[in-house]
Image 1: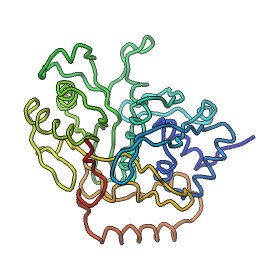
Image 2: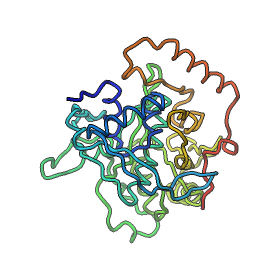
Image 3: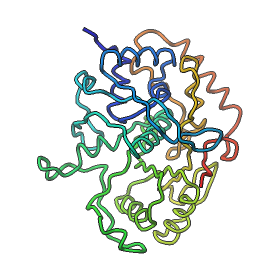
Image 4: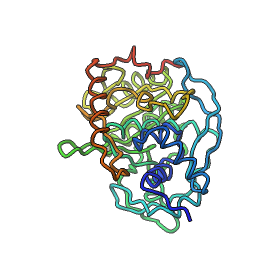
Length: 338
């Protein structure tokens, strides 16, 4: 009988929580090598604990977003039986999650959220997923009054055309949440990933809902016209918030709202055995905490002495950092897609 090892369990927990991921996501999440990740995913698939499906997704090639066929990984029903229940930070509630079924727009959105979570985790943020929050904080027949922490009451203010808000829910659940605590600095952010072009009234309502609850928020908005509309019309005119751009990140004057214009993951990865997954995320920290540094999460599964390898990895990162800051224009991470 196959028994998953420590790395396998970290991979399986990741897939359970995020729902959908590409192989490079798994590499960044675990800090394992490409060859090791390829070997473990293959073994887990052989034993029916994870599944691999080819899907059509909008990915990045030469600075443009193109429809690409790519394999994605999900945790199978058999994999769930090897995992302990997940306790969600904030409420302490136990989430009951089921297999993610990749289809339609859920693929692009799911991969974009995983992109954002992987980038944040690489710089020390802990992650909470929408799946976890909805499982524990949504009203159901069996849970009429669930504990609430990440879910916020929907704003009662009316922005622009009220007809766009006819299906308003009593609460707003974001696409995820981020927690940071390095022993000196603590922070929390609600995460939103916007791929489509929603009406300004809906965007304003969602932003205002989180503001009214006193929650800081970060928005990953793919299309440049939508970003401009959110900043100029939604925030500037409807909500009444001002801010400025610096190195590709828009920050409100009170540092409560951040807007990032990131592209999706790279379409062509090459051979995972030799892939440097660290090159697939921005080489600078995400917004929310000043001075956040790259974190090696391999301690979650390593049992042998890896101090020399870790020291070499840290030295390489320090060398890259010494090259100086990366701006929005030369990083290749910010989208000008229409």
